[in-house]
Image (cartoon, rainbow, N blue to C red; front, side, top):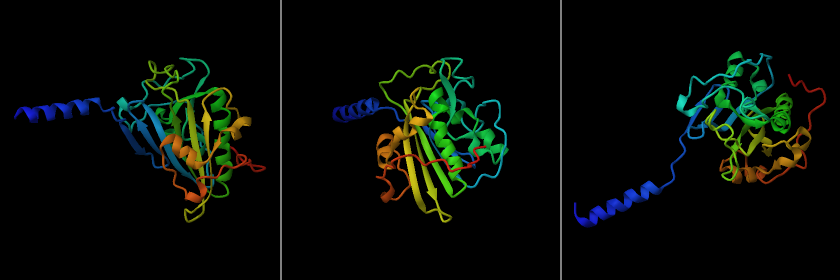
Length: 247
């Protein structure tokens, strides 16, 4: 190989070495929902599932377990509570366990740690729970597709659980609910980007309403709704219908 060729090869190798490492994202379809998992973060980065009228009331498992379908190198290093490491954080479900109570298998899979991330208790039991309750109510009227995931920020101190669990703490979470008719056509949609902090209570959910387009811009995701739905921001979140069964 001549000197010019060696210089070119050296330049290429140097250029490749300086490229940022790509996140190793794997996905798995759990029959009832789908997760995308970033192995570098040991965290789910997106979830997607479809709900229809509620047809069961299986009990949620008491234990959180590792995921038998995903490599251990892609999963959190521990199943123990975040609260035991740093106070004020819950093991927050991405796919709500209550939404999977139609099947003992489905609700068990929703308790895999691949479906769990650190959520501030007030947010997990507040604004995030309210989105789950809205979903639970409206699934009785029409099919609901649910998509969402975490949002990280490079400048945030998010190392509470890096040593214990191997995962950073998201700054925010996003969720989109899509109402679909019998044929899968979109008839309505709503979305939020919710801060992962103590202010994100149930009564403040409307503060986090975003257009689908804004959520796409913030997350890099492509949300499967027609363009006519992408720029709308409702004045308030969908109200819980009277007599809704949240069990």
